[in-house]
Length: 608
Image 1 (tube, rainbow, N blue to C red):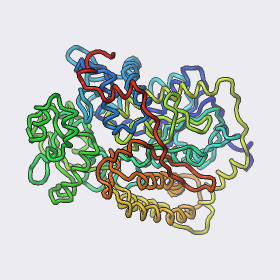
Image 2 (image 1 turned 30 degrees about the horizontal axis):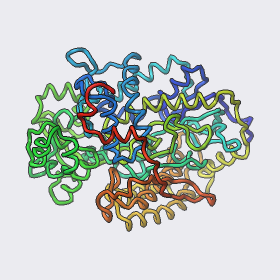
Image 3 (image 1 turned 90 degrees about the vertical axis):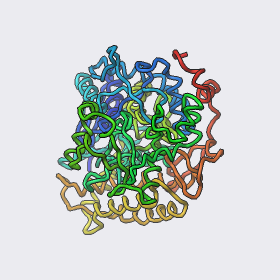
Image 4 (image 1 turned 135 degrees about the horizontal axis):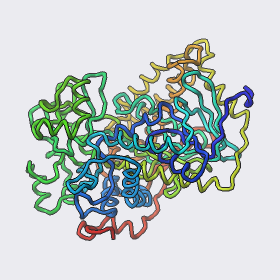
């Protein structure tokens, strides 16, 4: 294929992914006068930002005046088990309020307090009511606002276009090769900088809240050009996904149900979360020693319910109840809001959940309990970036949102993902704009382009090969069984071994020979990124011999002191093989360490 025959677009910056992080990055670039392009695997805004129903975490202090960025930062570090990148967590807590107010200026309509301020609700792991929300449709409102704003910024949005691989020029990013999903035609995007905002890779697991787009595309493309991945062992299993009927297994049930008073019950009608409160958490989080004791003694009227413990704790508690025979009929737990709030209030505060269960499960949540269970929801790990600029170790490549790692450490607090994408989407746009100053377009190497195209078309030209859909199912079963919510060395080693075997099938898959409207071809292309993502998680999990946050090892119970001293980094070595290593963490800045370890009394009142 001659490059001159390829459809070609030129942009100063190309953003890959059109969810909240991608749109916010694109807006920032466009506002700085850059020719900005954005490609979307699906449609503009059809992303998991929409699934973030509960709210956007920012220390606005509208509901409780004691809240401020330092307490938000402290909560984030403690939720992440102190493995977060300190500077990222600081920037996030400091800048989130401005990004939320900015979104309001752009037209977002948030729920209001009686005084007319943006309303904020309680959420797991957050000290104070901190989540700015729009009922249980916060992500949808944010996407609507960002979409409307970006449309008027002259951003070129290339929809239903999948990225295949980056094109490099002397170690720097020069562009990206993609293809139109409808026609199968290849397209070249020349760019001085590329920002990945491609989300996670949940489709490597069988039970996941993630939709079909989440196949680790950014992780795979970045890895292949030498970018580092960080904290990949930390995969968040959201405690409450739908468990029935099978067609919707894994679909998210917002934490807002528990934030508005919903309680978890086992099949004996017991409110079991009181049995799973970590003593350390109670003493660190309660207002007083008296309140901590009330929690630990099972006082049902304690101010902050144990259902709002961090997601890893709640998910593992539900799993244990099921394993010990106290689960719901379909292998989950009961989430009851019907006995806690009047029907009209439920419909008003949780309209999406009401309709979701009514339409998908024929359950009226104003009258009966929901059946819920853990679902693979979010990647804390991702592409390693510089905290201030969001640039990777590959010049010209930036990342933000879920596909970037470091911000959340070992476990993400609910609501932090929406403020994360606003804060770091903007910073990625700033970083890319600074990087390209004075730079011209790189040279496009024809051989590289031909290699990418050939690899994709080989799938169509083979005489025979495995069915990509069956290979994907096998991958999902393998990950669910060996790299699930509870892990052991034996299972992880077996998972890694089976992934090597599966790789052979992935590189031989066959799709019928037409590139137009070909779901089998699309699936086959996704597999190469999914297997990189899956192997990175498995290798990182094997290397971390402790249980911390979203990573639980049955053969290494509890946190180890040495676990705080390193992050696991994944990179392709000189032989083209995946290598995971422990990298020693630098000492935290003295000021930030002081904030993270301070008492609440020292931090409350004002932003300091």
